[in-house]
Length: 209
Image (cartoon, rainbow, N blue to C red; front, top):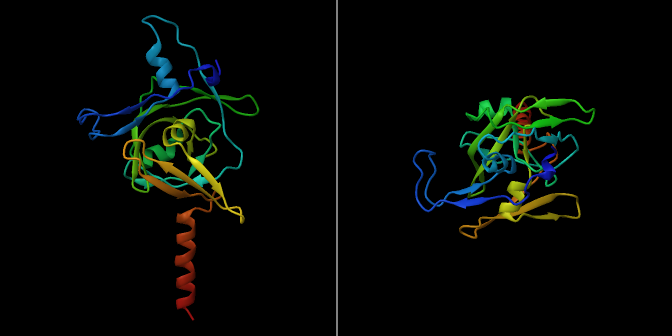
């Protein structure tokens, strides 16, 4: 069944005390996932339906959160996606582990279907000074590194502002502390890492004269 038929309300949890088993601190904000919520709603012995989602390919703006305290990942901001997903390559670089029993099926524009690898639970995302723990689906060879869908959008009550020059920023807020942060967005392939590399090359070039 298409993912649009699942319950659209995303569960959000605020830990009252430290969860040592999951390695989560007290006060951690945990963002749910519609697919995981569907799995947990099944009665014993109830038949599991295959869940299909569309594979994103359109041009979208990107942000660069720190994932799992490890690497900054180019992340497409897509409010039309019902899930948050990451490529297998980036998941491995970020040191993630995932549950192979919770899967979805990615459907491309040419009707090809590919099964996801599993679900990484409670992955830490750092946006400015705001930390969120998000459920992330791991996909083999998608057309992106990471896709930020509606679970992120719903939790942080994002507000997108577009300047006259076409640049966009996203304002997010921490529902626990009410702290806000403005996140710059970039075109794909032109994020801060790329810009830093270009600046280093320019400095080396100038030093040669």
